[in-house]
Amino acid sequence: MRAFALGAALLLSACAQDDGSAPPDPAMVARGAPLYMTHCASCHGTRLEGEPDWRIRNRDGRLPAPPHDASGHTWHHPDAQLLAITRDGLVPPHAPPGYRSNMPAFRGVLTDDEIRAVLAYIRSHWPPEVLAARAEMLRGRSR
Image 1: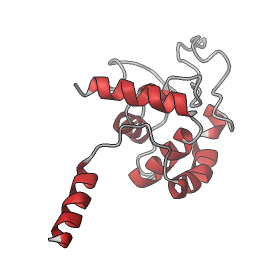
Image 2: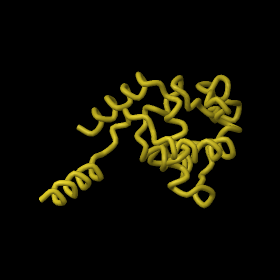
Image 3: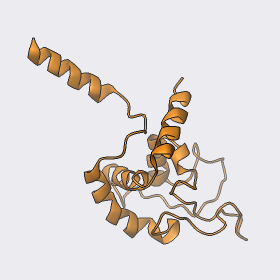
């Protein structure tokens, strides 16, 4: 009976969706840090600060790279969407048809697990109040 209870608890915890309020796993953060520095920091900044004037379009009509720290909007998006944007680029359904972006697709460069590690590294920089606000926002979307 005890083994059944333990198995049921493990199954329920595996099925539970992370609401985004908990700090990320330190091992994932450690794995993601060098990946971020290698593949993301040149545009999004070594301190996740993004490019200057990231909300103002460049002459080519494209927006500069946004920050991934708490001042940006990355935390407004579910992890699945962030993974898809990183893997496939900023294309529909995550951008309007015809939208032009400098965000490259990392499919074939990073695995999904590596992208998750990068996202853990980014998330590790968000203060508790941002994690709580994100959790509340994501709960609201799932209703």
